[in-house]
Length: 68
Image 1 (cartoon, rainbow, N blue to C red):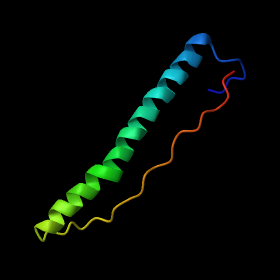
Image 2 (cartoon, rainbow, N blue to C red):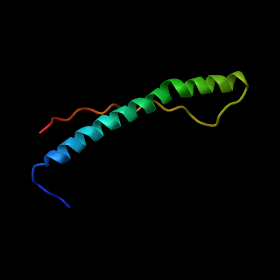
Image 3 (tube, helix red, strand yellow):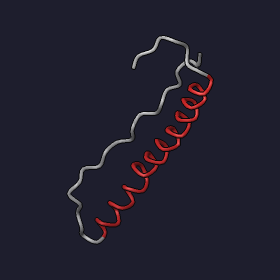
């Protein structure tokens, strides 16, 4: 349902909180991608085990949009 009205105070608060929580999750995922996974790959390589996966890069950060 589309609405052209201004967001309510609750909607604005929920959006702000969701963005903060999402940013934390993105940071956590990026930490896994940039440190945990490479460490796992090194450990596997030390034991002559090669996973069939290709490493992926970090995902983009959330840019802040202007608040109403």
